[in-house]
Image (tube, rainbow, N blue to C red):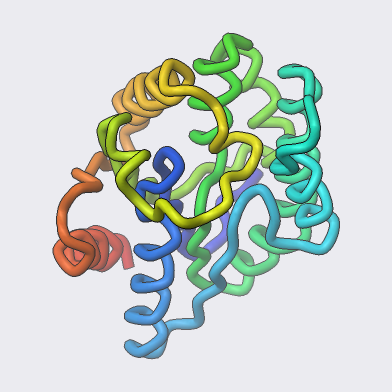
Length: 205
């Protein structure tokens, strides 16, 4: 697939790492500078993908790991073809909360399905599309219990600390293997993280 002309930026990290906050801040800053920006998320981003998201994150459901993986990839395929690729082809900046690295960390590493499996399915679901920049917000596992304590946890957030440790290790391994990925300390103040991310994006504009 020929690389579309837009810029594709992904914010990655474990649950409660600050992805949504940083995505919102970077989108606001880029729009204030006159850029045409699409803010989206995974799973989700389109009506079909949001429907799959509701199933995936429903704490009342028990989902087989392989079924979980295919649901994520189905959501991603729709999201990529309907929203991400058209925006990039139009020359827009796309900022997404999560993309393929999440699947490598959660399903490949933490669920034990393997990076070979997730890698193949990621490529199929995205038609080979890769982010121009992936920013991984890394936080210690213990940080999860100290953040946003009042919110109701979804199905993935209810996993135990051992699972979250596997997720973190999976993320760090995936980021190390990706030359377009940058790992930042997710414990830094939000405004400091934002400045760092804005600088990283600026270098690629």
